[in-house]
Length: 188
Image 1 (cartoon, helix red, strand yellow):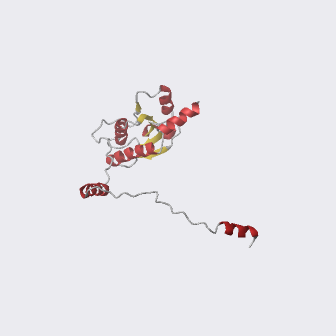
Image 2 (cartoon, one colour; image 1 turned 60 degrees about the vertical axis):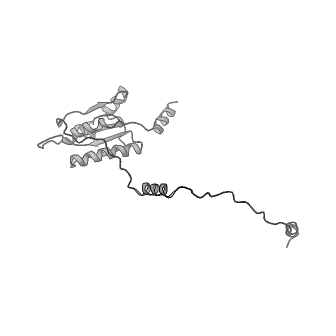
């Protein structure tokens, strides 16, 4: 061994490990058995499902080529005009073709929820016109009825021809707090 190693071992000869006290003290739960049973039952219960608020009542049938238009108060006219002209980037699309009304209702509600969860600001819903059918524009009429019922839908308008025309609808959704803050910081 080297002289340094010998000196080190010589210096450490009397060293003993320090006994450390436990830093964490575990307290036993003193809850009674009844409250434990209630908590266990609540934890194992079926999760509550979010019931969508969209109504499935008879709605007034629109004409196949009718233009859908809705603007919530507070939406700037310039912003609505940009939506109407198809100037916003369409981030996601939903196709309702060949769906029954009940399927479409569930799909529209879940689609909007998914858009909100993923910070989507502009979406497109293809509902078709139903031309050549006994009762045209059925899904279109229901979409026009459902979208204003969702408070996060700020505006919607029938699409431009290259996006499906009156057989599709642009939907503008409320921005998340994070996205609003990002926009605000970009402007400064």
